[in-house]
Image (cartoon, rainbow, N blue to C red; front, side, top):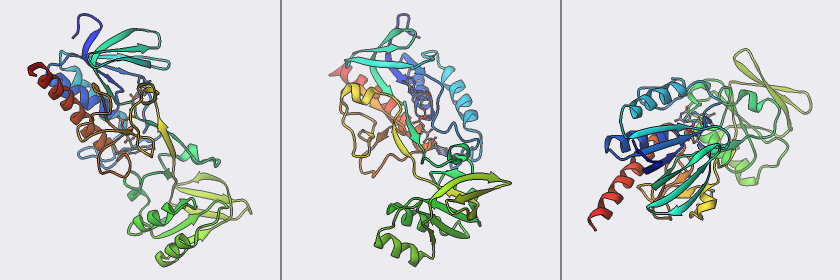
Length: 310
Ligand SMILES: Cc1cc2nc3c(=O)[nH]c(=O)nc-3n(C[C@H](O)[C@H](O)[C@H](O)COP(=O)(O)OP(=O)(O)OC[C@H]3O[C@@H](n4cnc5c(N)ncnc54)[C@H](O)[C@@H]3O)c2cc1C
């Protein structure tokens, strides 16, 4: 552990990306501080899927175990903070300064950003209450749970046809709820070819009834679903990409190389907030975030080691 408030690496965020990064850095005896608030993207859900050995486990259970693993290494310190958490990063490679809400600043040679993203849900009554359960945004995370039921897909943009196609082997039936919007002719043709039905009436609200989701339309008719897939709007959870002027992808993710290096020397990024080479979007999952955390931590170690012998 650093005797001063200065570390080899400051990891910001203790979701799966930050926790795995901490373990990797601890194993390599790099003085590491993990600074984190307590807000995780998957807070709305009680079950995490598609993670080897932990399929269906509560997300917090994995984090508790991962934190314990990282804490076993003497060089790792956790700094759990409240309020806005880390508010500002200044400096450069070898001399970054992190300002923290209610705490003394922390200094670090390198910074690993693992602060994730925040979702904004479609503005339909009942969606927020059921998000992470009968309403989901990702069929890889919550799709099998809707197996053999009528699955709704909310929206009218072209992605609804791709989603209807993706869940075809899972769902007994698919219905696209355009919420009052018009489909473009290509999307309408694709949905017709897939045999998905389309409801154009606006959605007045959704609510859980028993194990099903009852959708009430504006004309008071009702549709019962086994699950509803929605598209969320997401944005960086923390302001650091903007503060540091990092290169961003068109989708709003931090551009990183395969090792999690950002466009600014000494700053690395891992998890949902970052987009690696060749990917059309950030591949948001707990496992991918953990893997990215390990890669970025390895890059911190490797870059410092090479700098030492240069
Ligand atoms: C409803 C829902 C269900 C999901 N289900 C699954 C699933 O079943 N399986 C799956 O693989 N994926 C699932 N996901 C996706 C998964 O949640 C993410 O891919 C994963 O959490 C990303 O991890 P992360 O470490 O990048 O970010 P997060 O887990 O969001 O962690 C971000 C960390 O940064 C901290 N932080 C943010 N800002 C600051 C700041 N300014 N200062 C200090 N700390 C800060 C937070 O407190 C937190 O510790 C789901 C997502 C949602 C929304």
